[in-house]
Length: 123
Image (cartoon, rainbow, N blue to C red):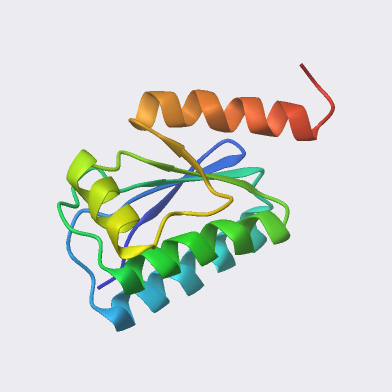
């Protein structure tokens, strides 16, 4: 399953709308990181609002994808995590370490813009 990656100026936006198999998750990671490189993106938002369940593997892939995007020069924010998903991840010991999160896409965009500005030496 291919997850679309949209470009909005210097930001990439992707929304995971369906449960992913492990293979789908790894393909998503590869596709998103390639898109960061090809588009020379300053930031990435991964929206998971539609997901009611995030298993340990997907949590690890999301965490690693955000860290890898940062290594490639793009700030990353994961937005839209459902409260039950957050609770489950913490109980499993799979918190998203070192990754910016936001309650929804609007806050995600605000947070991402602030991170990009801070990195660029702005406010």
